[in-house]
Image (cartoon, helix red, strand yellow):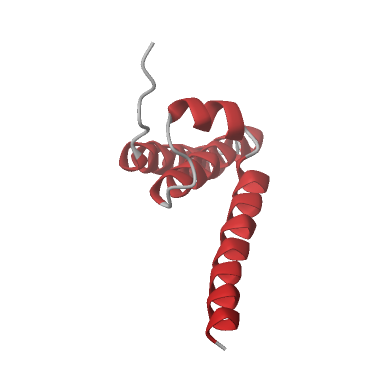
Length: 97
């Protein structure tokens, strides 16, 4: 079984379609369905961002590690990335002094 690299551009296209569906549902008084489709659009957009930033390597990791907890995972991954950047900057500056 091969592990495919997810395409962030494809995920954004699907997210845009889901957002359009959410808007139509909302405009027609189908609020619960609109909210669900909006959640789907946001989830796909965040997954696309995670892939584009290189925080998720492949589809297997995306499915295993992220699943439907994309918002909390995004925050944790970004916090770790910021922490690593601060460590590199502080470590470099303290070594130079």
